[in-house]
Image (cartoon, rainbow, N blue to C red; front, side, top):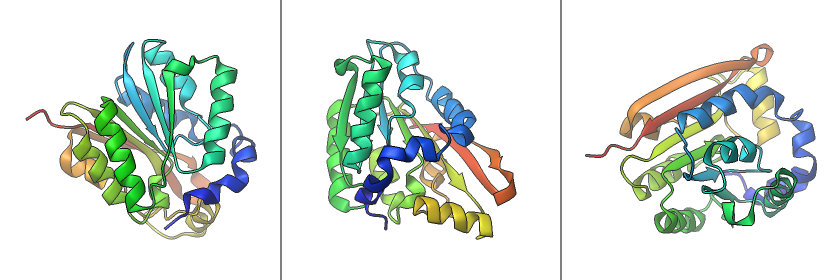
Length: 216
């Protein structure tokens, strides 16, 4: 199980190390589109990291909407705060919350937070494959949100532990063989799953999974 604070050590150069998020851009855009946001929406950005998705999310929800930015690394959240300032997003539109999602107590914190804020859109971005307890987290969040809530996951996946998969796992302290979309597939309406291949040479996919919590 990954220690969330392990990401503190490279938070300051994370964006440079991912080449400005080059390999994930298309998948991120689709994940945000599948959230079906509109002006005034409240969206939870789980594993927000340095805030890579802030501009996409804010463009769709506007100044009447809110982003609940959740991460386990205080240094990543610090970088996300700097990104908010650069983008000129109002303080009222962004709420930062630190919680160690690798620990049961951290999941409880976020469940209470989501239960209180009631976002109708949930984005899990490049974090679930880092957690042994990915099913516990996704199931707990699913239980906490209202019926009709849209949920989307953007992450990496490989069926086999290829050399490329081993490299991705080492870089992200992850296990990209984890089928972290399963809780959504089993419990959502209108479930969709699609894959992108920016890492063809590594034989690793980036996938987007989405669905809606049933209303009945």
